[in-house]
Length: 113
Image 1 (tube, helix red, strand yellow):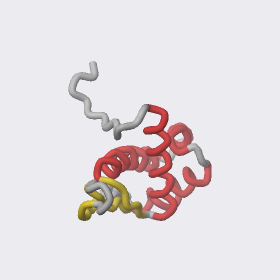
Image 2 (tube, one colour):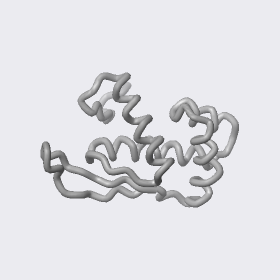
Image 3 (cartoon, rainbow, N blue to C red):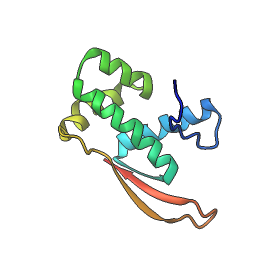
Image 4 (cartoon, rainbow, N blue to C red):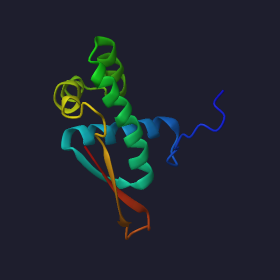
């Protein structure tokens, strides 16, 4: 049963939410740092930590699972060969709270590897 399981919906339907999170994950892997709203950063951090623990297994099945989430072979290669070996004990992602966004007052954060 999934009683009281937390799943941030980010005020979007499922397909748009998945596309947004996939885009944020790609940006995080490519640049190493993204600046987004706090709720988006928390959701992205959750998935990125799961991807990094997959990358530590370094099996073909783990690579295929990561490809299912990311959708790009080069990003999967970077994740498994360059990013995951840097953090063997975990603690790869860091969430830094920023001030409020001026336009709409949304709480901002920086998520970095």
